[in-house]
Length: 484
Image (cartoon, rainbow, N blue to C red; front, side, top):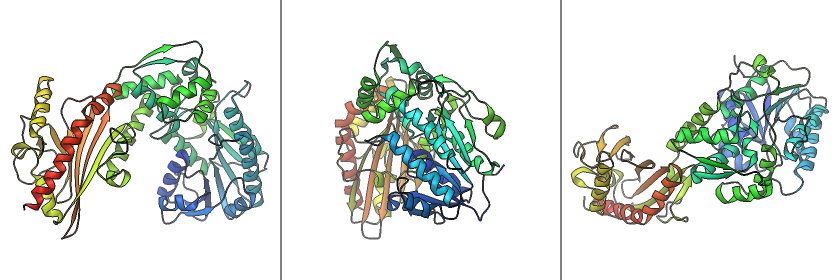
């Protein structure tokens, strides 16, 4: 079953700079849909869209700009909310949805697809959940057919809830847990959510529909944290406490997670409510079979690995040779130490010392420290440095170099090694050389993906040695290339 609308129909996407909207944009583009994105700052989005996607300036609080954006549109996605605003997010949500519905009606839009939130409307809901459901009602009052999806926690690499869970588990092996971590929820994987959002394009809708969607498991936040710990091979212990207000919890989250207090408080106020699917009609209507929480977490971590492998570290992080943060920059769970040097040699010459690294050639600086680390690894049951390397010839993917293995190799350009030593996490060492016949830039990057608090402590305890080893290594590589 395809989810692509006819080629002559135009889709308006709001929230394309957000998490769900940004993921949905890529899916719509991949399936060849005509897409127009509404953005307050088009210049921030323009570089992230494909050539066939249109980006227009507009604001859901500005009715005039919405009318222009809706012109010629068949289906409009409403994926915006005001939870991060400093003022009254409820009033902003009311005005935004009222404007959106009015503009859609005036311009003849056939369908609005809206992503709301699960929550029993017979209960006294939190302001956030109440506003999410109120927005759906306001959109329906416009007279344009509205297909509303109501979802619980979204699990995906980069999602707000996933980042909160990750930070709590990675940094607090023993944590005091308030009552809200036991509230039942039905988390949904981001891929399953996107499947619902895209398959809705072909659903014949002439009247308003509300679908409750969720994953295969009903589980609490504590259950999601345990699932994350299982996937990362960690153990966590939770000590429940009877009282910890949303305000105090938000301050606590602000200390150990990427959330700032205002967002944390609004999120926790919503978590205390049950957000489970009661109406199963979505499973009967759509060809989507959502995965459970363990698979959702596994896929989120796998996607993060894919993004990590595709990222050009020297572009994303400071490459000045000095880190602004003690212990290097961070990407997801990964700690990254990247440094650069320039040498008046061609890339082929500058890469030659890198290609000979390890084995009898050593690691160019502080070789005795490398041997000590190899001995410690041997004692711990690892491979140590006894494997050496196959020789000084051309490397191949899969070759071993002491306690590293070649993960990626491009002659005269790139060498990425993955560690096979005993570590509280995963580690990579990458060398990249670019330039012309006269000057080359060597980028050396050490990446560590720590497991739990001990993994992070390991990195920080060794960081002074990293400064000596990695800094010295790069300088000696430059010197060796100048001697060729």
